Structures are given as structure tokens and as C-alpha cells.
Length: 404
Image (cartoon, one colour):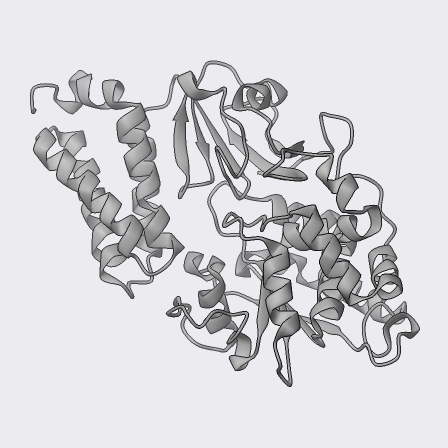
């Protein structure tokens, strides 16, 4: 599906509002590192990739680190099913993203930035490389940027190899170093021991794009959008059973009921919030807010209408996780296979509720015992779909009502 940009459906867009290329870099050099850190901290911005870690905390830890080298890595490995917002940002708003990387580099004392681009996005590579060339020509990259003596920063682009797990920051760093994409043990964390053993900030595409607006417009302006605990706006990749799929910018705090009206969805019975690894929310809960404190998401919104069979949806998700698990840790490697087997047994009516409950216990074990976010979050759809759609799944004739 070709992503359609919907600038906003409310006044006061953040990312999709006007921006002059290079303006955030110029402002950053004028106010200095300490003021940038203060502004980022006051904005309360959290990572837009899904984890929601405070951006200022990462920056301050790396800025304070004593090291010969430091790195900024932009995570553009957009592999979560149903997510395509970063593709839109990189295609239509590269100035926001790359300027944000330069600002980050200046703030933490890094001279090297790396854009880790999803392998399937190779079609963007030439366009992005051309944009970086234009930045160098305009003295927005390279040596003594905008005349700031001693501030040298450049950006290179690396292509990933299609592994879903490389969306996790330590697996991404392993891949950058030429190794198999597998999560590292933590601690140490990337802010201490990241790329090539040096302090490293890993930020999502949307996070860095937001930084450009925070620096030019100010933290107070940024906080006028969203909620107290979820400041700013969010880009949502909306797909599925709606008449107006695409990328929408909406403030945090928007409810699911408001969202389905905006995208013109009818007869909606379920919304998967947060991609395959997110939670499936039933119609009775559509008053929930999209925010870090309620229904949190990295951006993927999948809409299902009354024609969809939720057990089939769940099976599709679990197939994906079995395929994408790196296999390094037992809870994820074995657990996802067992959850898929459970779904298949439900399809055939070959289950007892004692067995179902044991699989739910396994899911909760995976959430706490898996090494990285893949195994920790892959049980989310299993638990939420079986709980929120149990009447459909366990009482339909197709799925064998009498096997309790």
C-alpha cells in the first residue's frame, strides 16, 4: 500500500507543520549544548519507536561519558507489521530527521551519525544519499558546521538485512558491527558500551524529527500538544478495514473512537494497537486513549471489522513471531512455537481450558524471562485476543464449544 500523508485532522500539527531546513542546527549552535539538553528534558519527549524511554536521559548519559568517540544511530529499521510512518518521514521530511541527528551529535559530542535503514527500503537510498550531499554543500554536515569551529559531524547510511529483531537497539548495533543480529545482554547499555564499544545514542526516526521542532519551537510549545505524561503529537500508520488508510499526525490522548471516525472505519470490532507485538482492543474499550499511560504504540494501528475472524488474525501474528525469533533465548525460541501450536489446536477443537490456561501462564513467563522486546511482547496479541474475544473464539461451532 502506498502510504498517504494526512497532514493532520486538528489544528497545531507538530511534525507536519512548516520547517526551514537547517534552522534547528543553527538554533542549537546559538544556544549551546546545556540549553539543548535542558529543552529536550523540559519537553518530556519519549522515544517514538515504541519503548517510550525518555530521550533526554539517553542524551545526558552519553553527553557526560568520557570517551574518545561517541555515536548517534538513527533506527530506521521499520519492521513492525503495519508500520510505515518512518518511510514517509524519510521520503517527505528528510530535513527534520537529518537535522535532528546533527543536533543530537552536537549535544552529546559525537562526530559520526549512522542511519540504519531497513533493507527493504533500498529504493530510498539514492534519494537520501543525494540529500546528505546537499547538506554537505550547505555546510550542514562535515567540518566546522555553519562556521562553528571544531564542530565536525557527518552521517552515513547502512542497510539492514531484513531481520525484525534488529529493531531492538542492541541487535541493531550487533548488525552494524557486521555480526548476526542478536540482542546483547544488558547491562552494559549502549549509552555506555554501544557501537564498537563506544557510548552510543540510538533514537527512532520520528524521535529525531521531533527534536528539530522542539529546538526551533521550544519545549513549552511542544507540551501544548498531547497529555501531561505523553507530550507532543504522534504519527500513526493506519491500515486495515477503513476507507482512509495512511499516515496521520494526531496528538497523544486521541481516543480510538476519535481515530476510527477520522479514518472512516465502519463496523469495527477490534483494533490492534502497536503492531503484531501490541495489544488487540475490543469495541467496548474504544474510549481508551492513545498514550504512553494507556494504549501505547510505536505507531501501528490495524483495524478489523466484523467480517474478520480473530483467531485467524492471531494465527497470522504467531506465525510471524515464530519466523522472526532470533532463537537466542529459550523462552522466545520455544515459547512462540508453543503458542502457535495452541492456536492451531483451538482451530481444530483439540484443547481443554486447563491447557489454554497453561499457555497463558507460559505467555506471562515469556514476558518476564525473554532476553529482548521480541519475546517479551510477542505474547501480547495471544493474551489480549484470547481474553477480549473469547466468546467468538471458544463458543463458535467452528472451534469446538464442547472441548472444555
